[in-house]
Image (cartoon, rainbow, N blue to C red; front, side, top):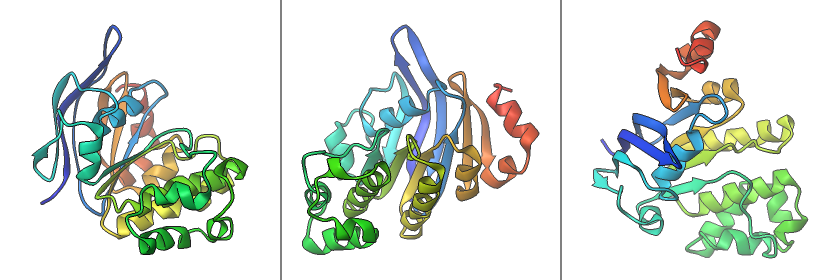
Length: 230
């Protein structure tokens, strides 16, 4: 079965490893939540998968193709899309111009904008004039237009009001419903676990829980112990 596969992945920064020996499979149409305390190495892991930083050990593959030594551009051509922290829009470009960067056709552009009526109404507005929530919609629309096979989402809620984030969260499920495999890093742990099928907790650079997301969400003691590194 096709998958994004990580095997014993270790990522080092500065003096030593920030995350060690992580193994997981992200399947098409499935959401995997990657949660844990701040500074646990979650962002570093996503950056290693997308090629922002190198791995210092282990291997990563997409549909059986090793990507550990591939460039970020080469990985994106295999369908790997990374939504990084911070609503990475191009502020001087309009909404349409931002989304067009990923769309291969006018139809893909229109389909992406149709997901968010607010954006469709502001197609010609520079992204810098949008609210934080609207800018995150642009980022999601651009990812949708890229037709990803696997999507890495890092702290989509960062800097957003909870009510805005709650409105955006169903879009993650919509990606999954269309067959996209998703690795989701999110500070709102219970919301992420409620959406995901599988969960990993990372604490102090290592995996302290790997299993059913709902079971973890329903067991505060297990979740607490995993966050403490137990």
